[in-house]
Image 1 (cartoon, rainbow, N blue to C red):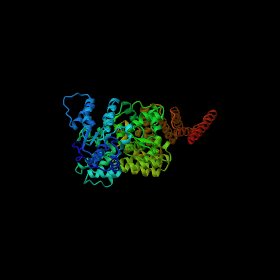
Image 2: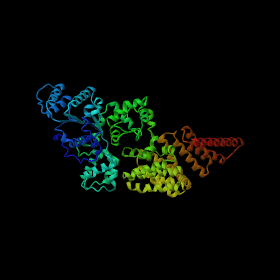
Image 3: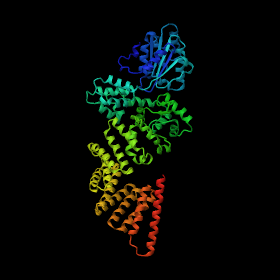
Image 4: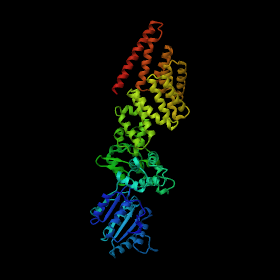
Length: 618
């Protein structure tokens, strides 16, 4: 074989047995072999191994790396040089060199293989270049002594030659093959139970596997497989694009360059499709891209991306997906532009439950974010299924050795048990499991959150003194930590204020609730549901204190704000009820006022019943 394609210095060849066997069995009946797959999946290496296996039946390999070839003329002169044709100061026209080359090929009986590597660098160019390449292949295949091998990320069709054209699609390595490759390239490393998550995080892509093995092998034991799993789960692109490597070898740069080869319109649509979490069907892609029909989006977007190996397609399920490392590049390097307005509000969250059972690295971060930041959405739209969802999130976090993420999910589960199921004891147990982890991570938003949740839970169980201590801890962290903690500041102040009411420490309660009112107005303005909540809490404080006049003043003001801001029904019902029950406590100086108050009381009761009915029927 030509020294140009010597692979003795490359990594061990693993897997691809089925593909290699099919290629070998087709050697005697086919003349052209197209080997296609996504960037760095191993198409070139498979082609080299294939050539080595059939080397006894050929005389000479003409290897042309089209990634390193600037234009058609250069390609032809390179081929002529490898054929031994002098390439001095002759005409620079491609047709001149093509004729010279075919003169040489037809005058001898040498058995040639023309190996065009990285052909996407020409196949993705304008139609004139593609036509020249296609005509070259057709002319070469007309010669009895020539075979052609082509590797490319862009699938190349040659309809007129289909009977002698073998197409091989190269997929990522399977789990056992990936494990074999990483262990062979990092000998002496004790992978223990971390081999499976490392394999999953490599996605079966040889480039990622070799980078992971290199980092483990060359760290002199400083970097363990457990460390690597943790780093890859949080910053895979950065870890696999170290500064010590040439820029062209870093995973981030390789796949960024791969995406950059797309035309602007396809690149923009690709970025929008990345907004869909997990796999999707043609209708979901049509909806996201705001295309007129499914046929349009298939023809203009999905098929071109499949042919360029930017999308995976499962024909049995008729679903598409973006390879995980490509998702990370899209998220890291590209901004969504011209996104249809509806897509901002509807990012296919209906698919959430189905997809969580198939969580991989590319969707892991999305699901953890959903689990920890969207509990209200989950409570509303996933009632009855939240435990299953959170359980899968915890299993995924454990798989990637993300102990902190497990704790964050536990906080969300605790909220479900406390606020939805009403199982306060179980909610408290889950919160405390989270606290054991989070207390060891230093002051953080997560720690302030779990303190606040535990305090609220204990308050609901009438453990007021203990509740107050946790709420104070949350407030101490939140009040000195910037705007991101503002919501926690308000929650802690409100809960502390109510807890102090039940401890009959009314002066302290009033001071804290008034501070909460001032802070809420400053943060959200005077007309906000949160303002209505604090006013209602002040009413409760005065009610417990025995001051009915002040109580109803705050209750009514809170009710007015809540109605104006269209707050949630549950919150509105609470204010309606508080106003209604306060009327019998008022002094009644005359009969007409008593009648008016009684009428208001019954009207409030009817409004409460109507809201409850609407709430139950939703």
